Length: 435
Image (spheres, one colour):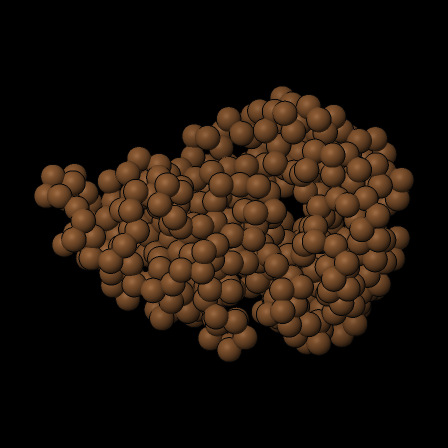
């Protein structure tokens, strides 16, 4: 049993906020109240508890990331399910939804079972999407019924955009019947000369063609139209352009099953970072212009973008050391996502902590129909304790990889403890020494 005392609790589901104690037992929350040790708990119960003084700390639901790559199976030298789970716990995440672009990809029940079986051996909840199309070839739908029955929580070919409109429409109709979300990587490769670098100042700097904003806009427009037509639940992944944000805003006014996610790197950085950091700031879709960054923040503020997701994409150092046109796209994000959200959005004056926590816990859990992202008696004992005022330099990652332009940057918000299923799965050295 854990008794977390004197923390400032935020529950984005009920709206409860204030100083509360939380008592956990087994995998559930037993009690939430004030001064539980004095007023409600027996001496015997207290003797069985580890008491944690959370004075000055935020107590929130464990974070839920709906866009992470653990590279397992097939690319375990970049990351594996165990190391990815450790990185997630350090970042305050108690649930992650993995993408399906592994090798082999998750287009079959055997690979799906492998990922879920390995995930159950970690300290956090590891869920996974299955693929939309066989072999991620964009032509033939997977056995979506069978994969759903075996535990997939959604479907995506993330990394490979779906170009055949008839396939997308069929996938949406099937997903709507299953009441499961589809997540879309919106970049039309037919319009892209070089992936990962914005067509503009950054591409000019490197002397390459780059990736134009139109590559995102055309697919977002198509897929939102189809989503409204079919009633499917869709997630526009890692949105990067102001035009796409506006398209989502208009679509959400017409249908409640439209979702969009922003990554911390897209609401923090612009193409200037690609010029400064080179391949460490190369990602798909690329970092774009300041007007796009501001549009993404406005979308988060007004609810157009309802999810903050990491797109945690580990790569080996030797891969990122290649020339700009050869290095793979992507950065790690699980261990910096919450500090970046606190630093850029809360301390930047755009959002309050309740809004940020809602986008990083309750909303993503709700989209995937997961029992997560809230704090309530009888609910899951998945919590994170955060010192929102403390600052710490990004680095010393628990991920196998370290490909991040944020390394060495001082950020607000230090995760002091992560609790999943009533067990402490990460504890910061400072809290460990004090409690």
